[in-house]
Image (cartoon, rainbow, N blue to C red; front, side, top):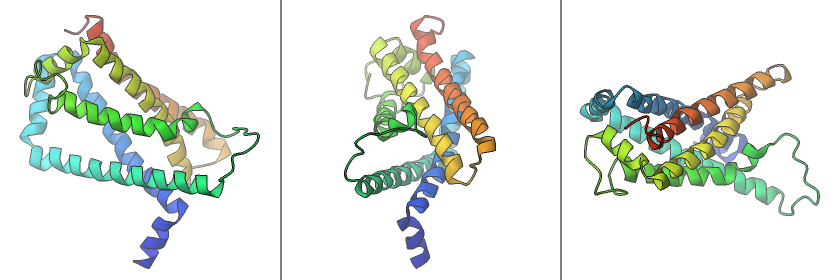
Length: 220
């Protein structure tokens, strides 16, 4: 117990937990996007995919939800604690602050995280419980609910902005977790930065393409 407390009590321990939970969450984001992309195949395929998940709720859906919820909780708590520890270590701001190893994505992590969390709640209320657009929500008809929602530009714009924030978060998060897990070497840093960029852009482009396609009338 003492060794566990010592591990979690250290900054590196918290960062490792953030990295491990981040890997799990990144995997979910990728699978979720690939599942959503089935909207381009047609309503029958997307609704069949949704039905498959709900028909196996006890074996697949709920275990996944529980694991993801725990990962989100641990990720947030560890991130806040690391941020607070960093602030307390430097209570007085630098008179001249030069960001050598950071970039825009890194500097926005502290507020992109809460924005993404708020979006997840919005996403659940929109397409899982139907509270956002109750008059248009048809239970088990995922294709209809997605198209009906994204035909409203405020809803579509919310998803587009949230996925841009997600891209920034994924980019810096992947870059950081490689470093935290010891995969840090000048020889490979360019490649891992490139890999993080490709992953973040691919996820954002895939997700954003759906509301854009619906607004443009390509999917209806």
